[in-house]
Length: 358
Ligand code: GN1
Ligand code: MG
Image 1 (tube, rainbow, N blue to C red):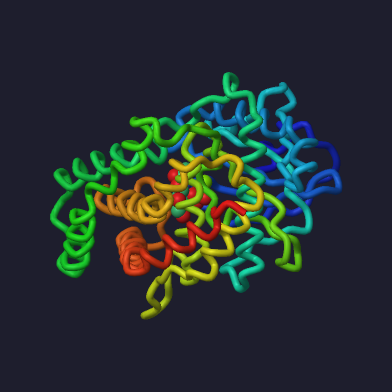
Image 2 (cartoon, rainbow, N blue to C red):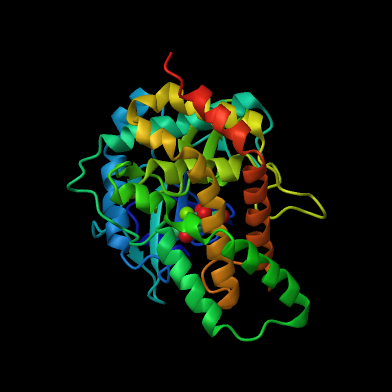
């Protein structure tokens, strides 16, 4: 990686290079150079066909550093290549970027307290306020089709049609997942339908506000930043809220161990939505709030679809540790979805309380 790093406009002796984070798409390293820590990343060229658009969006965001600080948010500074371009191309053709590592920050394996959950909601709310101020005509669609559930469903059905016969050991688990998805096919349209009818409006979103992408201070008390900004682009606030809740309210995580059953924690959900409303209730109208419960169902459904499609296609999109992991992850999202459905009245009350006019 040293020749890659040499392409960036950072000086000083290079320290150790260590793997960073658990991302499923890009490859990330922590690097010490010039007395500071940086994040060096290889962009996944299979997933991101328009890396220059991503970087243009990131530059817009990094340019709002002062406004972000005023909101109590950090956004990572970017380091350009020595030729001024946002990337350095390695000898094998891969694209690399370098940015500031936000100092003294940690990610949490799971939320332990409602105070942490409130912080999650607040940081997402602040991020949406910052994003709402970005110049919309300069912001680009960097990942077309991202969070377009009807498209994911169509791709999934195509993958089903093409899939080779699954191994015996997995046939029952796969069949069970497919049945559970089929029973909910209509869900794929909820947000796109509401958007088409003008009940909800497009905004600028983060796209991937899962717990791993939320930085806390070293004590785990204050949320400082959202990272992993590749999917910042126009989208629906409900996609971010649904994704954040499916990730943060399920204490078991995306790969539960043993017999642990994923569940939607109502206390954490209430605190996240309450914190969010404190910061960003001004962004939501009645129509936005009306589709929130369905959005909380939608995002685990969508991710289950995506994991299953990838399983059927031979694990080409998400990084897996072993064959079958995408199938297990799909089942986890479907279990979470079932729990969300079982708790529907309580979740609707939580939403109403969080956004009740004060
Ligand atoms: C991917 O890159 P990473 O691991 O933060 C994915 C998200 C999924 C998430 C599930 C660009 O995020 O959409 O919700 O995995 N990102 C992309 O863990 O597809
Ligand atoms: Mg990501």
